[in-house]
Length: 263
Image 1 (cartoon, rainbow, N blue to C red):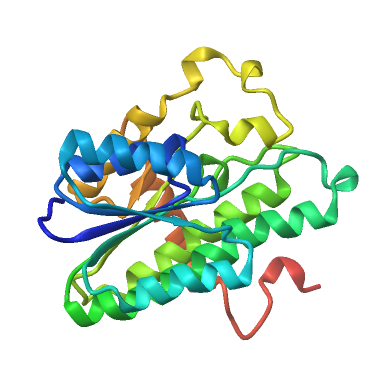
Image 2 (tube, rainbow, N blue to C red):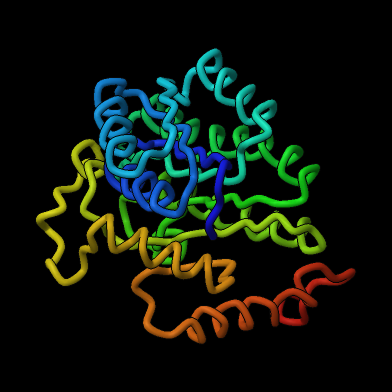
């Protein structure tokens, strides 16, 4: 995936995975539109990328949980014909038992991880399909697959991202537009600072750097993987998982209940 005179939009770009994506996409020849709440960090990153690569970098300060601010980003996605790539990376984490959690915090997490991602994808897709090319990358999580107490809302949002992406892949099967889901495990980013979990509780060998995670995700994209799990040794394991799920499909909706439910 390389391009000249085309733009990539990266949300949550001020740190972590977003900053790594920004650097890698600039290296691949993309101009950048970087979106995050922290203007100072965005400007520092943009200055570094401009001086290092010579690429044009536009900074858009926006809180994607705010309707007025997300509408500015949506308008850019709808109208800027240079946009070739959208990296839906902005997201948050919250790990606490639901019975002791704060409902407002859960709602904010859903707005960021689900609503914002959905709105931005909806805004960019018509232009990409009309231009006949483009890529959307949706950052999910390994916790879309791994059930862990305390992660009900976070895992629920990331499961949405995975399923949302897989449905889009079916809808766009005849289109040249590519949609990828990325499911990283624990990554050394600032997400953990406000998550309720100290990253230090995890063994070092289970924690990936943001640079390595993004490099793996881009390698998966280049290889045509619809779903990339950066630490998974064999893609055949994911394929087997999906094949097992497909065996359920013919019996998910039938006129009569299964025999075991009938007396």
